Length: 61
Image: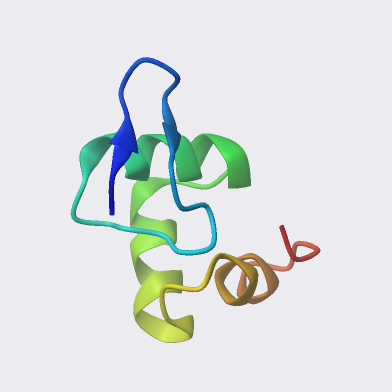
């Protein structure tokens, strides 16, 4: 998944790519969770942003 370094925003915000550090930083900030919590949520819920957000107890993004 491409990552826009200048804007610090993943180009595809429907999926969370935990293999790119910029994407991890964006999603930990956006969801207000630690990197470990984000990685665990992705492992349990999949890469869908909506699924991870719901898994973490947030409204779907």
